[in-house]
Image (cartoon, rainbow, N blue to C red; front, side, top):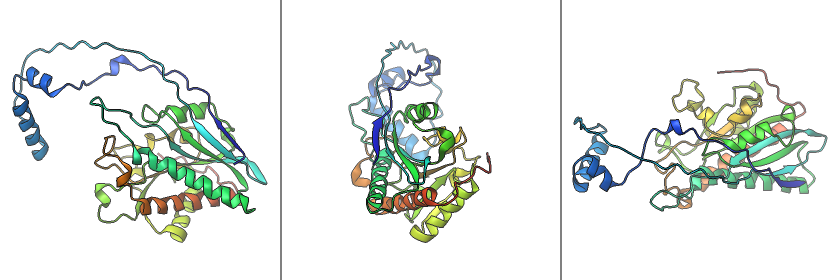
Length: 308
């Protein structure tokens, strides 16, 4: 690596108190509000979860809730490492992941976030190591690479938003962002076939980026590239929910690598013992070979589309 550095403290973000829509309460309080017992409440909950349908009863009454708001400032940073290219070093490829997670649950359980996004941060390190070894052997990239771990993703993509507004290198010279967020597990749709990855955004701004990605997969990985969530009509709207979006919205081509939501998403069960490392390593190879082509080809990929 040529340089390592961390970004300045992020700008303060003010939450909107009018946006509060729900409260979490204890089972005891819920039972009291509904004029029932904890045991009966648990039984009703089991019935709802099993049937997938809410109870038809319509309880009436008034409940008053007083909530004390506490404002606090939390300091956090993006962490980046820069590898300078050779003859096209003014052009920069960003490879990103997010280093934050959701912290400790109200009941004291720790959310480790092994998949979200431990899988992305360690993949970023592996790719950085691979490029470092190549450079040490005299086969370094022609274009520069910024390995970018951003913070604040879970609270609103704050770290990548900060970078897009305060880039370390001009965005006009940023050729693409390859963003890795949750690639260590499988979702329900692919429980019987683990050789897949969702790609989001690859064709939105650059047809060449999409083509390079497809060719890298055919040559080195041969996974199923699932574009389900690339559909602008998909209700999950994942295109807007990870850090690549703050690059895409300013015209930088992106690919978001993702393997879907599972039963431990944003729960304490998202632990390293459940990571499928063989699957993850194949996706890392796909990202690496896509990046290798992007930084070493003669021509910079062009922005030639603006798909919904």
